[in-house]
Length: 182
Image (tube, rainbow, N blue to C red; front, side):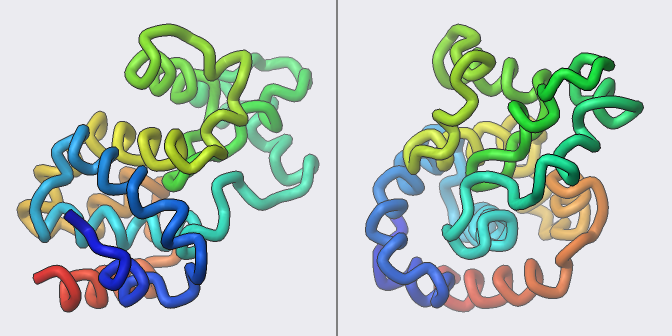
């Protein structure tokens, strides 16, 4: 079980948000079998980068930026409609790992709630409990525990980010998490 002191050491920029996220993080990690130091360290490193150390639970970007999810090949890959109807903004990245796109919201909703409520209420992923649960679900649904067990951090990053964006920061967070937890 992750302690408040450990989370502050790993995320020094999180401030008071540590208290808000500690219990939901521990519950989500337990539920989705992110349950030993290697897994927890890799998970927290990725979450730390994606959320700006718990500062953001919704993707940063203007409507223009988010419109890249609204039409074209990326929109189709994410399960959004091909029309410019605003679903790119509606299903923008949310939660601590930034679940993005209608397909991911639908799958996440079925896993967390057993229904499709996130399609109508995507902002639920901005609440601490669901921000943590959605991140842990995403992690488990992509088989990232096995990669963490083998120390395949770059592969984990590619699964989460699609590339290696922010790799330096992710690696620093990973090293800090391993130092604190291992």
